[in-house]
Length: 280
Image 1 (cartoon, helix red, strand yellow):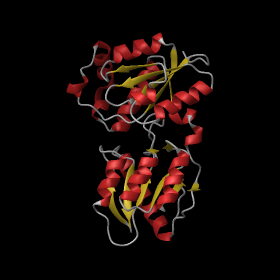
Image 2 (image 1 turned 90 degrees about the vertical axis):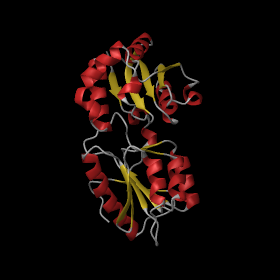
Image 3 (image 1 turned 180 degrees about the horizontal axis):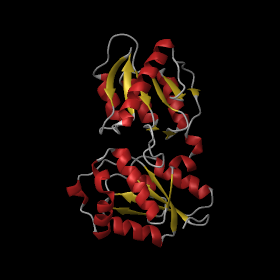
Image 4 (image 1 turned 135 degrees about the horizontal axis):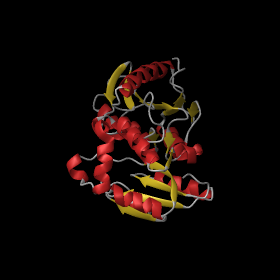
């Protein structure tokens, strides 16, 4: 069903990235249609583009709209809180998809999203990663900005990589905060920014901690890639952190230039790392 002339359907959660994917697809000459999820997608972000707001449980309506607008490729982008089964109120097609999801409904986020990607492919759509459209939003290994991590920060990053990879194998979260070898916080359902704020309550004397944000081992890269933005940088600074390390080539930056500007202003480092080859 994939065609170079087909429209790109964007299944939009919160934040600015749905519009950035739309801009990039439009620049490639592709028609764009956005499905904004009620309670998550931001009207001001998706408003300039052809769009409809839909309930998460209205899968039949979603598929119908995507086909009506000639969508062949789909991008899932933007944070969404996992709803309870009771609150979903699925339509007939939604109930069928829930049945097809089966045990994945009770898995972690990656298990659920990977199953959803498979189902969308079975429905005839090509599911694309946001990074395929936003190549400029990912960073190659190295320091971004003017602040350099020192040896202690490198040791905390290595510790954080080990912790996040262990969490990821259990499909729990993508991030943690480490200070002087001590794990201050790990990410679960609350999301990165709330985890960072919580780490500030556990701040220890001495140099500030480091946020480490990585793709889960074996994660489906077409959904829920790690994301950082200027708000992440400001939240890290407010929590007393000294830097952010994130996975090179596999982390979306909502606004790379603004992230670097905020980090330099706050005096914290931004470091894109290859977790499989990082040595302190």
